[in-house]
Image 1 (cartoon, rainbow, N blue to C red):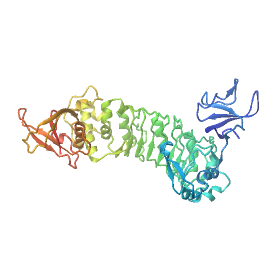
Image 2 (image 1 turned 60 degrees about the vertical axis):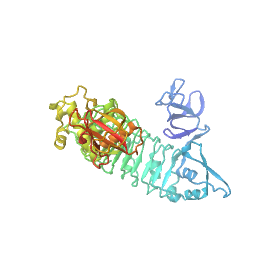
Image 3 (image 1 turned 60 degrees about the horizontal axis):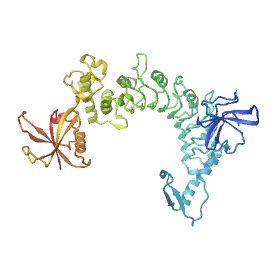
Image 4 (image 1 turned 180 degrees about the horizontal axis):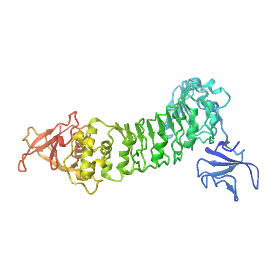
Length: 529
């Protein structure tokens, strides 16, 4: 027992912060800081005397080393055997298992479970092993793991009692096929020098909720020279204040860095720190505190390797930040930017934000986990041009919207409209059409079926016909698979009664309303096929 060791007491995990005597109490005591900050009764002091300082005023307790249910850990193989080795049952015994997803409510009879037991009993054949919360603290006798289960490729050791990185290295060095190692919720002693070891097979290391800092990550990395994916999320990181040294990640082919759930807010510092990772193509930053992404200055380096960025749940609230991404990451193809104030604060922007982002970032292939088709890109860029025309003065368009000139060359400049006083509103772009439910399908252009009911509908001019179809089905309260035919009333002048012209809903080209001549004040007829 020593300071920094991990313990489990009544299923609660903690770290030993004090070993010694307490004034007025006989014998040895352990001062424990609990992972759950509300688990304890104090902050590490007794009767005014401080023995250690916990992070929470209710995060500490004092226990006897001999306290019942106090565990200091066991070996890897002891835990492996407990999980995967089970005595065979008599063949006449009926067995039942509870379905995990039923929360104990559904129990079914299991047939020939002994075959399953025999399969898992062949420990040397195990390739994916999950030993989460098995109170493992050490590797065990030298060579034992290699002799018993050498073929493990994916290993989850989350919520165990590891305190020393040397024990992790000893386990991994015996597993030459190991590719993925998960260590969530383990709390390690801090390293003061680079970690030594040769864990060359590991390409994915997960250290979420371990308290590992960026400085510690740089000391851990040398022991994993083949690392491609590193996760250090939910570790209260507020800063990446140490640059990547030339002999750490530049020597490893790191492709993905996940920093989700921290409190990072300084964009320039973050980018300055990771720009030395020349192989990095995915950066995950969801649920941080990034509220603004400034454009790079003339002295800032862009990151050409990065193609995927995740910004979900950050307090981003300006469009300039979206434009800046194209300058920081010229080759970005995948972006996730859901649940941000920029898109949630205005109902109109929450509805049309996707089109505006696609219009601003020309290299995107996938946005918020959905692929961008060629048709959607064209519609979005035309919409974005019209939005710029509506919301920005002519002389300011190129300056405020970096893609304005290139998009005008591609799609042409929209007809001039007076700028809106509220640049965030899109309501002024909506047009009104009258929808008529027809009693039957018009047999010829001059045939005028009876109107069953009429309803007014607001739509955008560049709405795809396929989207209009879904809206009409909703008005009819019909199922999505219902076959309908849509007609637009064509008139020569205001006094003309008009004729019905059919809109082809089955075009492979995703035509929009304007393409069909549907404009403000149009009449649409809808009939069931």
